[in-house]
Length: 151
Image 1 (cartoon, rainbow, N blue to C red):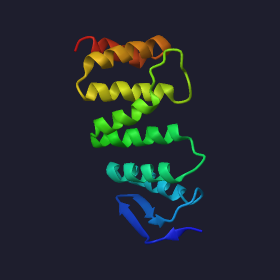
Image 2: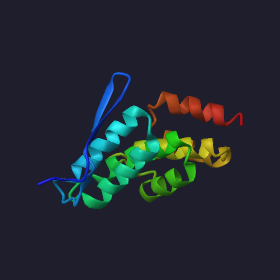
Image 3: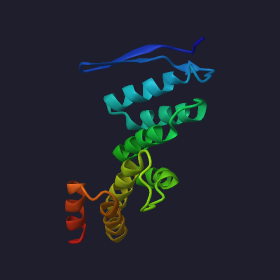
């Protein structure tokens, strides 16, 4: 059973989100935090999105933590919180050239993006070159390498 502490509906433009204020979560109830985070992302409130994703990550059991971490990283980047985003990316991006595991590509892309946003062009270039050596068909990243070489 869901434990609603409060409920409200937020409408901004044509976007409507239900805020259940869910408390006392178990695994099945924790999904409310995920849905609230999704709503906050659509509303552009990336700080609240990150907060709800992190609560969900903490409370939910048996979830794919990598895909949720990607969502958190995305919201942190949109907030401009590059240091915290980089901390989370480093947990999952081991930069192992032989690794092509689930979501490795996305974590590597985020890692390069964050380094570039922080002005760390040399490391971003090194990581981008490593990325292209693994994902040889990624034309967009090849262009990124060419751009980073001019920095």
